[in-house]
Amino acid sequence: MAVKNRRLTPKNQRHEYTESIQMTSAPETVLWTMLTSADVSRDHIRGAAVESGLRATSSDEDRINIEIPFSLRKRRRAARLTATVRPSARGAEIAWTGDSGPLNHYHLASIEEKLPEGVMYYHGLEDSALRAGLSLGGPTTLRVIVREMARDETIRAIGMGHLDETEGYIVLTTRRLLVIEASSHGSGTLLDAPHGSIEALSLGKRITGETLRVVLPRGPVVISRLGHGEGHGIVKSFREEIKERARFVPSLSGHSSAPGSPKSTTEGVTFD
Image (cartoon, rainbow, N blue to C red):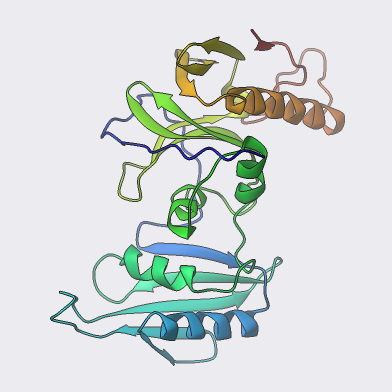
């Protein structure tokens, strides 16, 4: 499968329509999910930290302190990160916190890049990107998207496009359609539309690429310049998600759908 390598130039713009839900992490905390046991995950984190030139010590059974030594040559201040590792249904959940000030995402990315391949859980992001023929780069790029996911959220399809004039990742999950600014230092989620808020979703094609027209309660939103097949994949996955939900939550005459739930039919999902 041909892999697209599209360079993005994010701009500091945010779309007005945002319907937020609870995220998996607060601004002072970053959550990881690893597919190995808590004990093995701790060993992987210690090894990755040492390989990154940092010092790893354990303060108790659950916590690992990562000491970042001062370096005048690297213009690096001394700091400490703490990883709290606990068992989870998938393996282990790691909560990263900083002892003073905001977390240093550069050091977290360095540790993540040194972990063995396949031990991190990315909510189905890698498979979705592969189906779209989209190259997302390394863990730093993956983390930009994954940090917006809730614990039980799975990514169904992904593309790259523009909302207004801001470039970002167009992400369809089992719960929402998101536009996430494509920058590790960007403004985060530009559009957050739960399935139940999407009144219609249609695909169009232009010389500049595919477009998605999303009809929301406040009016339509147009996402433009998606790569060939990316918009189609998002619309197709959204239609499949609606059908799947309808199998388990059949519509009842005279009753509206539960908030946040997609409609029980594929009405409004169109391909131009």
